[in-house]
Amino acid sequence: MKNIIIFGAPGSGKGTYSDEIAKRYGMGHISTGDVLRSEIKNGTELGKIAQGYIDNGQLIPDQLMIDILASQYDSLPQGKGVIFDGFPRTTAQAEALKKMLAERGHDLGMMIELIVSEDVLMERLLRRAQIEGRADDNEETIRKRFAVYHSQTEPLSKWFAAEGIRHTFDWSICKTKEGMLEAIFQEIEKENR
Ligand code: ATP
Ligand code: MG
Image (cartoon, rainbow, N blue to C red; front, top):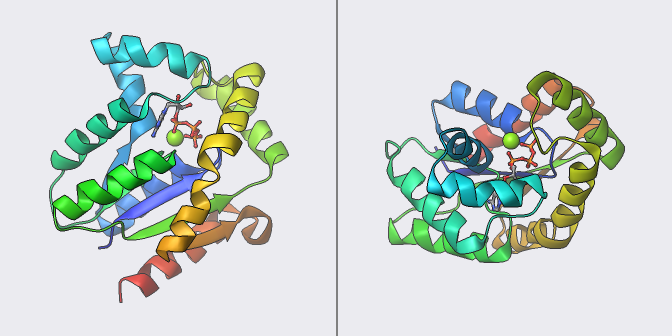
């Protein structure tokens, strides 16, 4: 399987769709948000550094993220394809990912972009706050994460388009999780034929 980068705003469903894709095709899955939250929970040095950024809705510095990503990637079984969920989030991260993969004889594969309007995102994140209790899922921090997404991450969409690997899925067209998944699965299978 080709590698897959899942790209989208906070609350767009990156984790949910990544889980479904990983299960269906037996792929590896790296969620940088989950890695950081587990470091925080375990009280590691890295967790202590990450916490301040996450609680403020800011991104963790690129070089730190790039190192974490490479070690996660190398710890996965090779040859099945990997889903990158929440990485890259900046152009520097994207360039570093491309280089890291090339050094291992691999490539970026395909990028899947999830388009969801901001009012739907806010509604979902506030609902998730009540279920999961994530510290960064409060309205003030969510607004900061949206702003960071627009300024630092969203421009990357064009970078992927220029690489010729961007595949966009729009919630307002698919309307349901099942509809989105069906469209995504079809596209993945087309790319892997
Ligand atoms: P969702 O998982 O619902 O799409 P999200 O994208 O905001 O929402 P995560 O991907 O879990 O959530 O990330 C949570 C936080 O972890 C980010 O706000 C950021 O502080 C940090 N983080 C995660 N991935 C990266 C990354 N690639 N670069 C920098 N910071 C990151
Ligand atoms: Mg997530």
